[in-house]
Image (cartoon, rainbow, N blue to C red; front, side, top):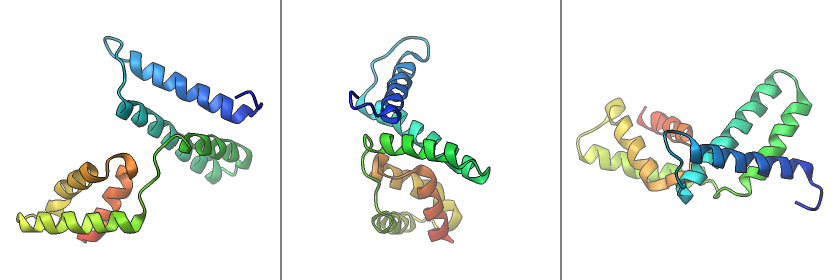
Length: 138
């Protein structure tokens, strides 16, 4: 913080504010668990990623670079993302397990996505999981 890196400083302040806001949201203030704090940080990272994509489509390179820089700061505090090959293996295993229970095709999608999310936790994005499951089920 004392190094004068303004992007890092403002991003960390924003992240702390988001966590505090999440803690007081609702009827009563609560103490967030580590998983809940992680969820807040992941949501903030996703916002930065989506904003950067929107700025890129609009041709606003400077705003996109700013969002990407903030995203890079947030990603240093998030767990590493699961590799796509490893995720694909888990999806294949869960599809096989669902098929053994009689669920096949599109009917199995909800069951497979739920079980994959349970196994991978926060190391993979839900939309990525859903997309891979959908393509794997055909």
